[in-house]
Amino acid sequence: MFDKSTWIRLPRNVVVGHGVLDRTVEAVEELHLQGQPLIVASPTPWEIAGERIADAFAAEGMEPETVIVEEASFDAIQHVIDRAREVDPGFLVGVGGGKPIDIAKMASDDVGRGFVSVPTAASHDGIVSGRGSVPEGDTRHSVAAEPPLAVVADTEILAEAPWDLTTAGCADIISNYTAVMDWRLANRLKNVEYSEYAASLAEMTAEMLVDNADTVRPGLEESSWVVVKALVSSGVAMSIAGSSRPASGAEHLFSHQLDRIAPNEALHGHQVGVGSIMTAYLHGGERGIWQDIRAALASIDAPTTADELGIDDATVIEALTTAHEIRDRYTILGDGVTERAAREAARTTSVI
Image 1 (tube, helix red, strand yellow):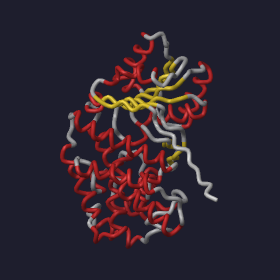
Image 2 (tube, one colour):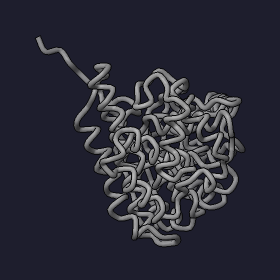
Image 3 (cartoon, one colour):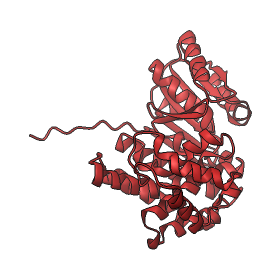
């Protein structure tokens, strides 16, 4: 008897476009969320967008509480959890890049309150996904949580974000190519559960950015529109899959290992972009996919080499040969690649 079932949690409201920050209260009211909002932001996003949102809630009689976080950590998450238990908000609002959004997301999951995502930078697909990333010492943890109930992405604000954050978001999406390759490989060799729909959506999202890479330029709202829609699609693919598989493969293991052995040298999205070049080559260099990935990254000014990441060649080789140790997730790296194979991949793709 067929007894398969799934539960897909997706954002109910996604508002993207020019000036939509001023529609945050409207997006919340349409969800029929009740009670006082707790706004979580870091210092700069608070100045850029958080204060405006707080004023808008206050004007509607929904006096917000605010928590300003300086860094992403489990201590910061616990601080927000403690504050939420103290004020008992109706919902949480994360305002900023990856840091405050991930913190608000995981805190809201813990206290059982809804969460609204208001990105001020299109730096990665965490703005809409059901996962958060938290550093702890030399390790970065990927933690499951509820996806946001609503996403409010103002392209006017996103276009003014530092360009390297936007290119990191683009690279994160482009790396879906190799994430899906790894997912299919794991399905064939290890019988890992696989969703053709989620995989196709993740691939389509990567293709959308590759095909439009020459139009992604600093300061253009049209570019922010393309990037944030791609980030939303990638997050939805993960929600459909019920895991990060559509957007996280060997290239993410490579990035997480870089975080351990060379912390804070480069942005996450840039690291996975470079990792995607090499892992695409390992999947079959003769097919030319790695060249397409490299060309797209170069077109948007994202790093394609170790030098551009600010990381030496030896560190890249060490990360690639040990990345399989990060987590129990089968990828093209299998149980590890030799130093010779890693060096050949890095040299052939001009990463080193």
